[in-house]
Length: 115
Length: 115
Image 1 (cartoon, one colour):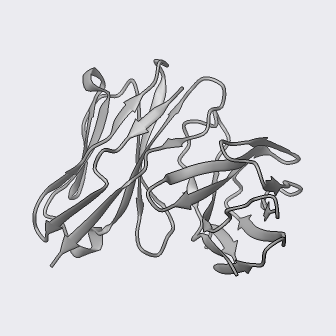
Image 2: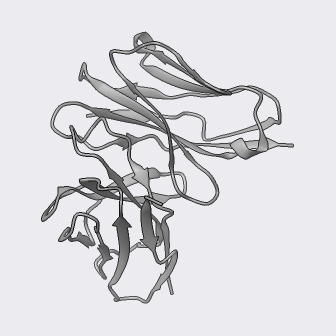
């Protein structure tokens, strides 16, 4: 089945450690996104990518990094510089066109917690 | 800048009641797109509807209906004869057509349908 796969479902990070969240899609979508969800905060955009080897910062990019070496993959690294990483992370993708008017398809999310 | 306000943080209804989720948006662009997503307890966001700013027709899909009113900058979502399976967090989102702008999400409304 076509869709977006995020792994792992649950992830624990020690203080000072970098961790990488995986996001893979087989929908042949050009654009991919990472969101962070905190209780009562809705979804906030971390990074997005419209095309391979290119990405842009979202509203809360500090402490995060991404890469887009392949169309189907958009991993997110939560670095030790992110002081409050505990959250639910959602990856999404959409068709290219204008970035704006295509519905985004979401993965099941990764819940990151600090040990 | 774009903004989406979902003033209702949480709503509880008894099964079979009708319920309306409010969404008010702000934008200076004349071409924009509005979306509703559903987030069930499993975590992934499910796309429900997209509406562009030039189409003010209301839409009905089964028990779901959407009322788009540009005069009040609102895009409200009504569930008729609610069911327990409708329990979820619902997000309204907005994007504009100028400059490949990503989605801006409201903070969501948590709907609980009690049997």
